[in-house]
Amino acid sequence: MTSAKKAVLSITGQSPVEFEVLSPTHGNDCIDIRTLGGKTGLFTYDSGFLSTASCKSHITFIDGDKGELLYRGYPIEQLAENCNFMEVAYLLRNGELPNAKQKMEFEDTIRYHTLVHDQLTRFYNGFRRDAHPMAVIIGVVGALSAFYHQSMDYSVRETRDVSFTNVIAKLPTIVAMAYKYNTGLPFMYPRNDLSYVENFMYMMFGVPCEEYKPNPVLVRALDTIFTLHADHEQNASTSTVRLAGSSGANPFACIAAGISCLWGPAHGGANEACLNMLEHIGDVSHVGEYIARAKDKNDSFKLMGFGHRVYKNFDPRAKLMRKVCGDVLTELGLENDRLFKLALALEKIALEDDYFIEKKLYPNVDFYSGIVQKAIGIPTSMFTCIFALARTVGWMAQWEEMLTDPEYKIGRPRQLYIGAAKRDVVPLEKR
Image 1 (cartoon, helix red, strand yellow):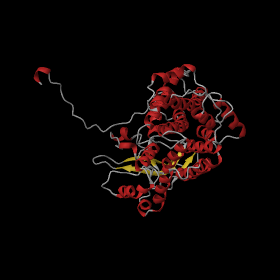
Image 2: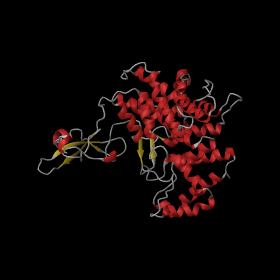
Image 3: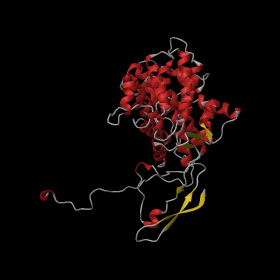
Image 4: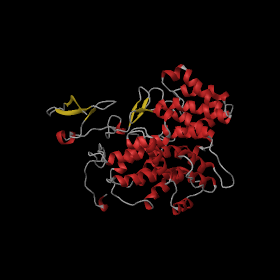
C-alpha cells in the first residue's frame, strides 16, 4: 500500500518533515499524517473531512468524476442487473458473491429471524400516532439491544454473525410496523415463504382480511432500490456508525445513530424533498416558470433531485433507476398521472437544456427512486425509512470491518480552538 513517493512538509523555523504516501487500489493517494502531531506538534484542519481519509476500507469505492460506484470491486450496474439484494448483502459483508448453496443458506438465515420479540411491538404504543416514522424506528432499533444483547465481545465472529443477522432480518419488520402504526392498521407478521423484499411489501401493504400477492415488477423495482442504496462509501451516516462503533458500543446503538444522521435533510431526505417539490410545482404547465427560477442565481428556488455533491457526472444509480421507473409506471398504467408527467417533463429538460448539461445537473437516484416509491404506494414520510433499511447492510459491513481492522482505535477528532483565551474567574461581588 505504501508507495515510493514521499510527502515533505516544510514549516517555517523547523526542519522539513517526511511522510509516507499510501496508494489505494482506486482513487487518490493519501499522505499518512498519523505521526504529524508527534513530529511537529501540529494538527491538520479539514472541516467536513473533505480531504481526509478516515479509514482504510475494502467495501465500496466511488469515482465521482467518472460516475462510478463499486461494491467490493463490482460495478453497481452489473450487480443491479444480475443479483438480488440478499446477494449484495452477502457480498458487502463477506467480500465475495455467494454460490448457490451459500445464497440459499444466507437467505434462509435471514428469513427465519425476521420476527421480533413480542414485547418489542409494545414500544410502538409509546409514540404518538402522527410521529414521523423515522423517529419511531430510531427508538425501536435502539431498543433492540435490550432484547438481543447476548454478548459485548464483538471480537468474536459468532457474536458479529448474530448481530448482523438480527439487524438485517428485523429492520424490514420494524420499518413496516412503523408504517402500520402510523396509519392505524394492524401489524402484519413476516412469512417464511416469501423473499426478503416480498416479505417487506407484504408487511407494508397486506391486511388480515384479504390475501396480498406482491407484484413481481414492483418487487424487482424495490429490490433494485435496496441494492442501489446498500452502501455509499464514507458518507455522514456511515462515518457516524463507525465513530459510534469505535467506542465498542453495541451494533443496535450504532445503527440507531446512523439512522438519526441519515434523517438529516442534507443527507437522506432528498427523495422526499424531490416529491414535495413536484407537488409544489403542481402541473406540467408550470415547468417553464420553475426552470427559469432554478437558473436565476438571485432566486432561492432549487430543483431537488438534480446534481449530486459526489458525482460530477451522471449518477450511475440514476441510470438504473430511470429504467426501473419506466417499468413501474408502465406496469401500473401511470404514464399519464399528473405528478409523473411533471417529473418526466423536468427530466427531459434537464437532459437536453444547455444550462443543466453545462453544470452537470443531471437527475440523480433520489429523483427517480422517489417517483418509483410513490407509484408503489409508499408515502413520502417513509422514503428515508426505506433508505435506512437498505443502507443498514452497508452500515453493518462497515461496522464489522472497523472492528476487525488491526489499526482500529476509538475515534477522536482534533479541533482548532478559537474560543476565549485562558482567564481567571472574578468573584461574584466584583463582576
